[in-house]
Length: 416
Image (cartoon, rainbow, N blue to C red):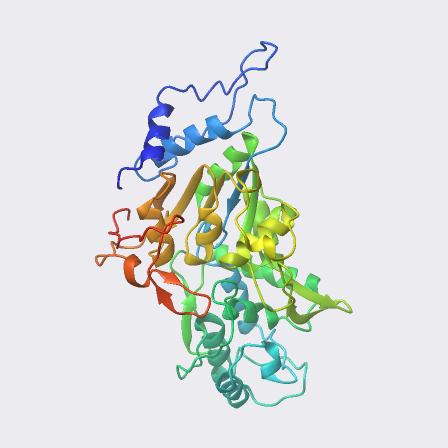
């Protein structure tokens, strides 16, 4: 790992701190015993020391404070291995839970004519509201999976266009929009069954949807479970910000001690008791225009945690309205992770924009850890930060710069 000025100072300071005594009251009361990170949990390098010192210095255990510091975590591949949202999507397809829409083109305002035509050809024209037999109709399952997982048709044509690439991932949104016709209680049941299936499956399990092999297992990271509970015990307000469906992650989060009301994700809208096929907007934008993705994650945080509404919800806020710690693994997380005031924790999945920021470490507060289960191999070629590191709203790629405008040079992958 490259030398990190502030992170290095934090780690060094940890040697001078007693993490058992987190402080004493102003009235001279005895020091409070504060929960520490489990010594038996393995972290990369000195990351555990850095996190321990951050918790001791920023946490509120044994201190009189007006507000709890905020710690925000992405969910999929940050707190768990693999993707709980995708696991539920796969379960829906393998159990015939997607209902025939009146018109495929109405399932997303960004779905291309090519995608609509491919879906009609593969899935037929059954009556609207009829369950599609995706457990047995392999072409239909393959087409839905290709579009929902890769934003391309089975033949490789682009499935979506005309959207803001820094506020919406239309394939993620489409997986939620396909819940149309189901009730919230039904989705909770589906997510519960998918969770049980994926936790019971041995690590490395694959399942076949149509003719396509996909992941068939999910695991909670024990290191992250320990970090979350230690943060909570030290007075942090720990919340989840995810690009998966919010009702799904509310099923998963209590296992980590994060209650359902602390989860922010894609919100499917309801009408007359069932999902309408639309998703909630943010920042003054209406339904289906933004999700908890890149700038959309910041917007949701500002609206739902800090009460900031309208277009300014997309703007970076003053330090007192930003998380102290933010953790993520993908480019979808780069904006809110970058907003953290004290520590940016990155799980390395070789995602270009996030890893460019993390390795460049412009404020000295970035901390990188390999995936805790089956980490990515060393990326031999440098991340192309200086040429194509930044994704624009139109989907083009351009050089990535620091907040002050300085170009970020290409970065080597050194934490794996």
